[in-house]
Length: 331
Image 1 (tube, one colour):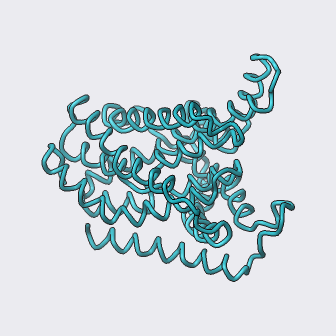
Image 2 (image 1 turned 180 degrees about the horizontal axis):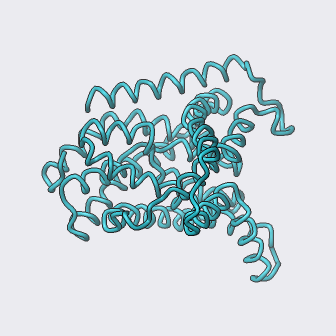
């Protein structure tokens, strides 16, 4: 692993530690009983990210996306296996009945095994190991990463929530509730608005673009400190089997699926293959925690899985880089 990537990992752990210290000292207040959200600073900050900073990032990304120049074959090699694992984990958790008491649980599990830390760790990894060519491929993946996964997951979780609320209501009522809550949503609505502006050809006004850029830059530091605060408030889970299972699916199973699909399914080799496999091999991203807190489900387990997968990435990243050398990658 390059020195640049190591320093980025170290910086992430320091930011998480700062958040943990602030939460431990209760400088922003403490979690008290079952009162309003104001009694839980971590959830309040998570809502700020979910309703302001993440929508700004998604809207700006989709509004500026150049659809014609995207390498669709490379993107298919990444997103098809990622979405398949996402749906598989979601389906298995539904089949096991994990969502009986917590309807959002299957979707929270699914985002944990599919949503990688493509920005804080992925960018320096791609740039430091694969150079400008690798960084260009990775940035293309980033441009559709949150857009694709969060939209699919929002549809799934809102369908489950609508089904749970509907009880004996008819299918049409359930679908209507799902569509309404999916479209009028802080993830999907800015995506649709950004795509509409993109298709219009008008382009972002300079002032609006500057505002969105400023808001977007707050996502990374806020999410990292939120992970630390959540550790302080929720604590480590008592059972580690689920946490390590999520980390193993993200760090080992997902990149293996991408390698097989991209190398032998689509015939990708070289830099493109290496970048998308390493993108799949990244640890769980902090957006998984924001998603869990949004739906008040498995916050502690998701937080621990993010930290555990980031720690274990130090061991699994060299393994995947070595395998890529043997199977036609550019590592």
